[in-house]
Structure formats: C-alpha cells, structure tokens
Image (tube, rainbow, N blue to C red):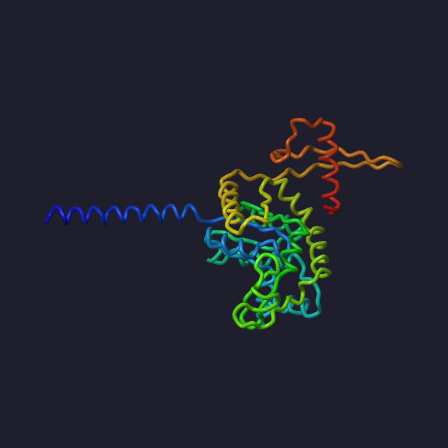
Length: 308
C-alpha cells in the first residue's frame, strides 16, 4: 500500500510539473503585434479571429473605436468625432492615433494587438511606428492575403443568403440543392445589396490604390509577407501562424532616413542621398552601384514629397 501511495504522489507531481511546463510554454508562446492586409472578401475576418485566439491578443478596429468614442457624451474628443462623422467627414489621423494609443494600453491588449484595415496610408504607418517606438514596442508581422480580382469577384458575387436564418450559400463553391432556394425551408435566397460588380470594382480600385504604397513601406522593414488567399482556410491559417512565429523572433529594423540635397537647374535635378541600409529583402548582389544610387534617391524624393 505505501508503494501504491508513493506511485500516486509521484504521478500527481508529474502532472503538476507538466502543467507548469505547459503554462510556461503558453506564456512564451503568446503575444504578437500583427497587421492584416487584404481586399474585401479575402478572408481577413476569419483569419483575424484565429490569430487573436492563437496569440491571446486584442483586435483593434478603428471603426469600432470611433463609434465608441461618439457614445461618450462627456468627452470633448468624443464630441469632436461625433460632429465630424455626422457631417460625413473623415476624422483626422491625430485623433485616430490618440484613440489607438489609449486602446493598446488596455489590459486586454497586454499581449499584443491585431489591426485589420489600419493603417491605410504611409503617414498612418509612420505614426503607428512612432507610437510603438515610444512604448518600446514593435510590429512583428504584416500579412497580406493576396487574391486575384477575378477570383475575388467569383467568390463575392456568387454569395447567397437566407435572410431569416442567416444561412449562407455560394452559387459555385457551396450551391443550394435547388437554385436560389434554402435547403431547409425552401424559401427564396437573396444576394447582399452591395454584392454588385460595380460596387466591388470601385472598392477594389480604392483598395489597390491605397495598399500598394503601404505594402512597399512594410516590405522595406522586412516584416511584410504575402499569403495565397485562395488556399483552404486551414492552410492559410497554418501559414499565417508559421510566418508570425518566425518574424516575431527576428531582429527588427527601420530604413535610415535619407539625407537629401537637391539642386534644380533649368533641365536637370541633381540628388545626393545616403543609401538605405539593411534592406534585406532586396537582392542587391547583381545590381550595379549606379542603379542602387538612383533607386534610393528616387524613393527618398518621392517619400519626402508625400507621393508614396
């Protein structure tokens, strides 16, 4: 009997030890600061939920932050935001950054955060970078869920919904048993009011115009990675986690600010610039020094003038 009791105690101790090790593993395995980029319908919503759960981080939506701020009747900031939104205007970047600053300081964001749909411009990206630096934090990964426009249109324009139950179908990928009829009730299926070719084309044009410079901005920092969003949800999720796990362990860096001196004549523009250092995601082994000099100079001028 003593031997049996001793074995039970040893087993309990082993279990406790395993639990402690699991806790340690979980603590070191959580936490990340992530930005998701992707066109409407690329699957960001599904992936953001999985990433938030995986890393135990908060999800920050600037739209939600603005709506919450308007509900605060005692705040001057809330009143300012409410007036702007009621007139259909855009809230200025400084106000948005103020809301983000307060949000990432909340207990639920102590392990990190995930942005979906922010930043939208280079300026916002720079402001977020400065904010994180002031808090001795960093972005770990910027994940772009890439999908061709034609495939995206097939995915979105084929969506069908049964309004009363919320059941969803797809003409091509998940068709109902009978065309345009709910499998359970037989009632008519509908399309979402904004699922039109004209609306989607306009949204995609805006998305590409905004996103291209932003992708280049984060590619320079070597934290941008593109994922094929036409894969299965599980494959996209697995790849997303693998990338975040890898990037959050890497040393981060920021391209140096180029020192630019311009002299303009009647028909020439002479530019002297320092090369951007540590641009690890560009293979420069086969590029001439002249090309690199011109490339870095042009990029610096365009950024200085706010074009990119």
